[in-house]
Image (tube, rainbow, N blue to C red; front, side, top):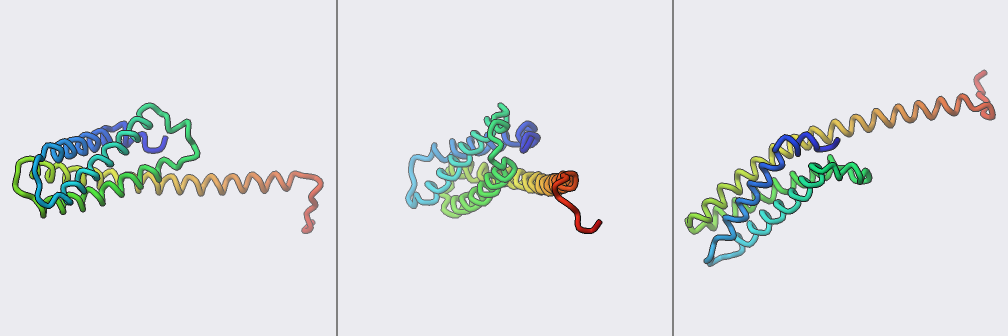
Length: 162
């Protein structure tokens, strides 16, 4: 079950909550003079919150099993990797443009906490993706060997070396 351990162990729920808190903190800010950093952080935290929430629901309800065409390990890796990168950039930008209000400071802190949590999740997703690649190559090898045995057992095909 791709990604199930990571999502059932509370890792995704923790990330989900951190992204939600960061988003709530940034939404409580009423005034800003250069607002671009604030808007970027708002977009990143909301996007990460929504995408991680959707994946959390898919994995928690085992709905991902019904869609085997999607490589769920790679989907998880892309989500966590991009979220790590963008949360890190957004947190740095917001910290640089910080006006020292409580909500901005809290958003920056939760942004960096979410970055760290996403980074750990990315590390786990890379390991899971590597394991799935090894299993897939082993399965391809076994499938090829089985198909070659099927060819040998067909009487209409004659071997030239006998």
